[in-house]
Image (tube, rainbow, N blue to C red; front, side):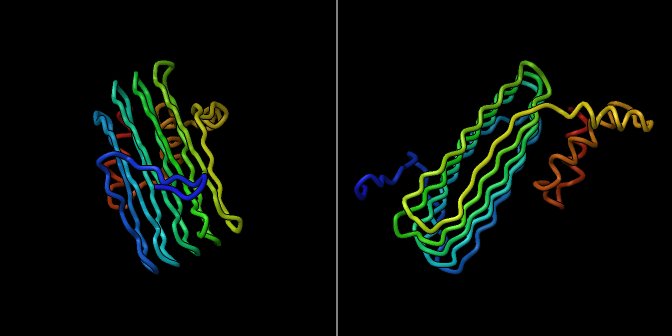
Length: 197
């Protein structure tokens, strides 16, 4: 199925979540230590004013394998989507994030934003992040970004110099990093998981 160079990708056995005109989809994902997950989500924004907002966090401390594959397909004009995924990987965990935003030729005035940020706690943990944009329209606002890094040593030093024990300083930094994607109803559970890392 296609239109010139414009090819609609498919993901075997995954039905898209269809968002019609004026509808809003909100999805949140939480993966806690000890859980290996393979999460594939396809979203089709099919009518003017359709919106989709995806958030996710993952905490991996052992040999977990966590894979996200997200396809956000803007098929109609005037739609908006946001994606924000954050994770922390330690031990020998392996994390993959594949995120694709596709803007169809007729999907003018699209707004689509995607971010994936990661902290790695050990040399054995591996994170691969592959954000992608496929834009076939002219009048759009789209961006993507990805980072993989370590805990900030300067911040840890500052907190320790103020009398905060190292383990607590690390926990506070991880909580701060994840705060934009922590669902309020699961905050206590997630804080407990972070303290176990």
